[in-house]
Image (cartoon, rainbow, N blue to C red; front, side, top):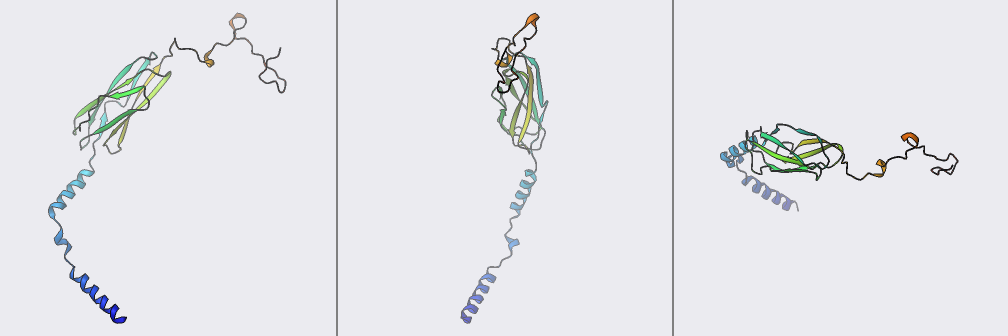
Length: 185
């Protein structure tokens, strides 16, 4: 058994030492240069710079269609590719952006349409998915939507009973235990 182990060990030693080559001779200098350039470029990202990151439509009528344009420039060191632009709800529609790569220094734009849905102060976010370092950028639109005068009243908006001389009528309620919410004269 000892001879078998000794023989196997000697065979392994010969096999491993005969395959030993100088690894530095196998390196292709052209591959090293390509890898160095690739690594240097991988740290360069496009940067999207907007002319504005928020647009306020001000006071608008309910259901009024409005739109604005967001202009942007690639201020980074690599081509900018916008893959998608989405809004936080269906009442806001981004459109008309270029799907082609935008070289450093070049500019582009997209339109955001808002259909005036909602009431009072409304704020919507538009998310731009691109190959920037963060991967997502955002802009925002706001508006004050005036209530629709022709909209049906909700129960909470219904007028309270009116008493003498236009003052609100007193609402009677019971103070007896077990009669909460019942009106007793």
